[in-house]
Length: 129
Image 1: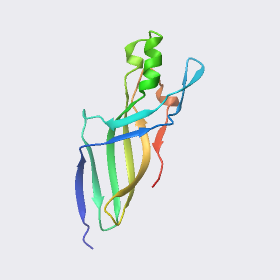
Image 2: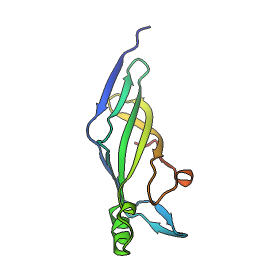
Image 3: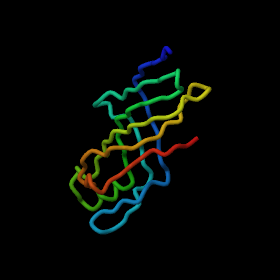
């Protein structure tokens, strides 16, 4: 059986999460406010589309910004390293849809950041529509 693979490079991504997420810092829980998600162009985001099995697998290098929480921290006079976007690798897989769109989800490996320790930080993109 012949497989129909197409290698892809993602060149644009812009998303937001209006409701944000809770952030624990120095023993207190804060709201992140809205989050912004964009490609981190420091590394290529690439993947493979397997049309014979109708499956997609893509690694997105992303930057997660939290402008409202960053402004709060800046107002407190914290080190600017704490207000920078969080960099992460999102390994996603999912179905290739009839309209050639994708239903991708997967785990997100968060890179070291001043606000977060690697052992206690987790992120994921859940299946959606």
